[in-house]
Amino acid sequence: MTASPTPRYRVAVVGGGPAGSVCALTLARQGMQAVLLIEAGDYTQFRIGESLPPSANPLLHELGLAPAFLEQGHAPCHGSCSYWGSAQRGYNDALMDPLGHGWHLDRARFNRLLAAQAQQAGAELRMLTTLASSAPAGSGGFYLQLETDHQQSTVHADFVVDASGARAVFARQRGSRKLDTLPLVCLAMRFAPPADFPQSGLTHLEAVEHGWWYAAHLPDASLLLTFYSDAATVKALRLQHPERWLSALAAAPNTARLAGDSAPLAMEVLSFPAPSYRLDRLHGADWIAIGDAACAYDPITSQGIVKAISNGITAAQTIHERASAACANGIAEDYRRYLVMRNTYYNWEQRWPNAPFWRRLQQNSLDQPMMQLSSL
Image: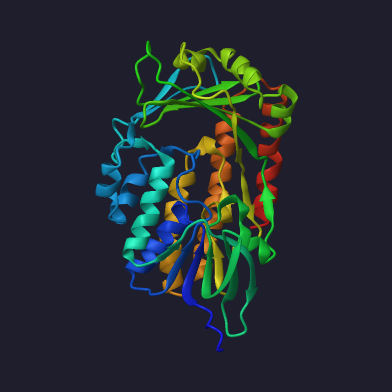
């Protein structure tokens, strides 16, 4: 019996988040045949990362996704209010922004939309599929061993885009390493809509001694409260326990006021990594890393999803033009600018110079940028 030939694809995209789906969508619309989009999940899991700034609006229009996006019913975000650098409230209003207002997302629904659009454009979507291993093919490209429900199969890809998020699974198989710059931990709880407090269309930030709070009303009207700190502080204060997390919330008066008397939807603290890093090598022969696989931004900058979408568009264009090095150089340059932005934001807060969280961050801002920039 003759063995079945190994399926061959022009491009395999590992990871069906915003970066990967937009890359596959753009490639398919450019007329490229045999594009494979590999997604480990099935777009039903709750995902953190729910804010989309106004700068995303022109990207959605460029991709022709604005009408479908609006039909999904995401909640408008008209700006932000913050208690940062002082106890006084400050505002960043989107009313005068020429790009319009931002959005509070149902993130799982948004990711599902992007993947569905890539599939409709002609890309093949495989969900609940992970990359087990990879190896260079003698004729160029790579053999990818995929695993689905404990069954394995092999495909041949002429070019691989690693959009697998913080796992950077393909790039790390190629030997890339992460250059970290003080990653954070996100601890989240969701609350029922407060009965005695009007729903806000603003993003809320509050700096406190041991980190900072973020709050937003999601499209289903529930209130998401998240606390960001470093792992050492979380461990020392035992903030992964609901009662300790709620005590920390009570000590943040402006954020606690948003929740009012509302009860958590579940007495469980959800924990998510909030890394900040760049790979030391972003591309090689017949592959490139994009999105959070290439570099991850601290959530304080609110640039993660926009960065992912932009990377997806640019990567598709440069693959088509065989100019992946230009895309990788652009990602590296954006990371330089991100480090400056991140350090500026954290150095605005000087109220707790001896608190371990702020001391580590602000010392990091003095030491890390030069180390990171010298390695780009």
